[in-house]
Image (cartoon, rainbow, N blue to C red; front, side, top):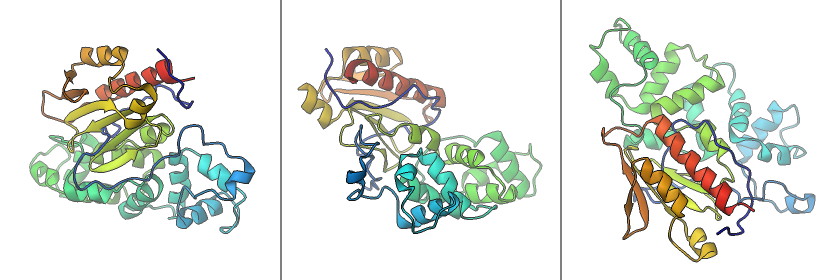
Length: 304
């Protein structure tokens, strides 16, 4: 049975590590700003006058200048707010100059995505890894005056905060990382895939992870929730889903596909649950597969 739900644009994204979570991960949640409800990405000019800004004045001023207009002009504000968030981040980061440091990257992520990487670092949330990717490990080993393949400082490296890892790596690269490389680094260190998050705006899939809302709107249908270390993943219906369908039961087609991936069904709470048997963060490919299934279900069963 299909229900009439607000229409949105979505696709199956090459997602990798997103941030695998959804509602209420912990008692210290830092809430990210809610995304606009589906279908509101195109505004009439009369509506724009009373429109609540999506980004701060600081962001808008910097992006306007990068686009070649006066910092106080609002002629391109509608265009800016309709840009993918990663594109806005690139324009905003350019305002910091040719050599962007870790503190500036973390500020940009917080301003554009409302995700606090420093909070993740302080609480030691995020990907649970034995080692960071080899390129990062080799660079940090060299920074500790070891050979790239030496493991003598690995325990020390893995004991550093995520912010320290980022800062040390970016310094070793002489602060010359491209925007694409910087987002990849954020994914590898913090387990936060900004490309994937940007693509999920208006998807009607709520995600919260590492103590923070990542993607959220009033018309989300499903909730994807991960534990603070991304080892556990839970999926369940939102209040909006229950209101428009009259049921709190997940679609059978969705449940069947996720059960085949190794999820278990908790009947008492109507939750589909998965825990990585390796006791490590859920692999990139698995997260991408799960999100692809969720988006396919939303498109097939709930899109106009």
